Each structure stands twice: as C-alpha cells, then as structure tokens.
Image (cartoon, rainbow, N blue to C red; front, side, top):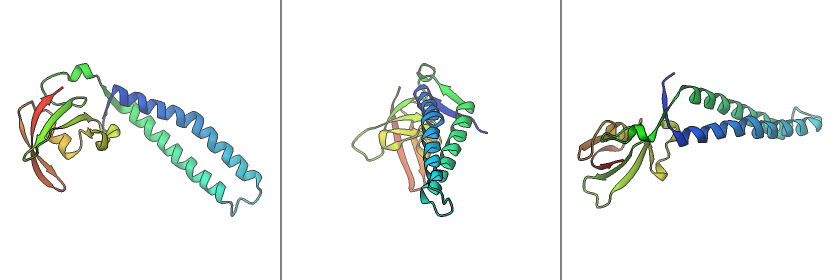
Length: 155
C-alpha cells in the first residue's frame, strides 16, 4: 500500500471521523436495524435494506480510514518551511496570461479540496509544483490541456 501524506490537521480530522463512525454512527445504525426487525417482515422492509446498505458503507469507510491512518506519513509544517514546494507547503502562483494570483496548500490526496484551495500532490498541478522553487516557471499537463504557471512564493 503506498504511503499517503497528511498534514497534522488532516490526520486529526480523519481520526475524529473514524472515532465518530466507530461510536455514534455504528450505534445509530444498530438502533435502526433493531427497529426495522421489530416490524416483523424483513423480506420487503425498505428501512431494513437502507440500514443494511448504510452499515456496509460505514464499515467500508472505517476500514478505509484505518488503513489510511496506519500508512499515513504526517507532514509537519516546520519540516516544509523551506524554499522548495512539498506536501504541506502553501504556494502562490500566477497562470500565464492571468491577472490575479492563486494560492494553494499542497496536501495529500485524502485531504484535497480544490474548492477551498487545497490541492493534492498527486493532481496535475500538484505534481508539477512539487520540488520546484519560487521564481520557477512550470508547465502543467492537465487533462483539459497544458498551461504555464509561475511560482511567486513558497511558504
């Protein structure tokens, strides 16, 4: 299993999600199953089916989180405070021809959320920026086409 990178905050969030699933969500589903079984006929009981499906999803997510957290490498922000872009870095870039700067935090795939400026080190942009320095001009090969960005600042 490949190592996944997580920031300290990301690791804590996933730990909290795992704990919530193990305690509250499992209990909630068990209660729903118990109530559905008290109704008698399980053959055509939609609530029972829905609860069983949710139980399978929750158990799958618990296993996924357990593996992810067991194999994760937590990246300390002090360890990335350097000149080169690494997981945990915050990078300010400007796309060629654009008038505004964009700021992204480089995170592991499990923490990625581009809508809030958190991009994966495995994404086309993230891969292109890793190990680059402030002032570098980088070509990004994305599925929608290639584009060029200049790294303005690495924090």
